[in-house]
Image 1 (cartoon, rainbow, N blue to C red):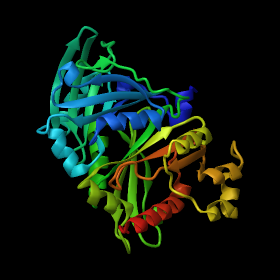
Image 2 (tube, rainbow, N blue to C red):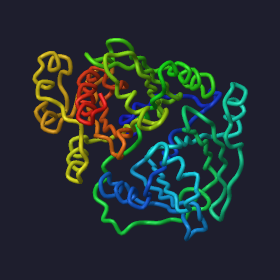
Image 3 (cartoon, rainbow, N blue to C red):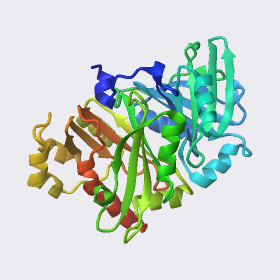
Length: 380
């Protein structure tokens, strides 16, 4: 098993029998209020490297876009230059967030044909974009809210990102790589809509159900939500989908939907091979994490359930890292506070050791921590 397979829990899969084969993540495309500052933040705090750029200097009068990479993960952050850019209205409504979960596919036309036949909304028809580095074929599908999936076949392209972008590096002094890949991307949808979008991914994109969390799995004394996870054939692309459930108070999903003004991407899980070093590096750059009470680590049931892990529990406790074990192995995980002004988007750091799960044993502790943050914001 390769390092990436260990990090993100990949399985063997034959694309030739898949009606909608997905190779993996291509990019997470963000709309932000200030792309220049966001790009610097992702470099300085998250250790990403600047690879490409588009903007007025390259002929794009509408917006600036910075392409950043860490291992197999690519982020593109876009910010409006033209006051009449459609990005202005999008940001006014949603704040900073992910607008496009772009996926790499081996055959754009095959995927779009299947998707159209199974009820998808095609936002952009398959077409070629070319420059001196070759040709990229792309199309785009609508999904929940204003989120889209751009489908990209870049097998005939050797440029820095896409036509219209130029290679660009930064004078920022890069340190060690902090994370290596995208593990999963979580979407929040309205109450009663989760099953609709699970069916969309299964019917339109050929994904399979990977996990389901309902009832007491994912509830506290005050709030509750429901979650189902779908994944592509090789499990490189995993989408947990959440919806609120009836509770005594507002759940984290209710809060997200209110402040994002609709469904969208709630958090991005970043895979790391050394979560202790990752957390130390991020915290040193000012990234804030949800605190975990000492009682979590002192629970004898936790000690009995997790068994032996690669680092002492005391080291996890010092950093607030959660640990969970299932039939396949264990994982270590921690969650940042929201990284945007609105209480919407945040990151998860995850280190997998065999486990293909999502930390079910930590749900109650995690959601209690989120509720404490909601209460401090006045939104519980």
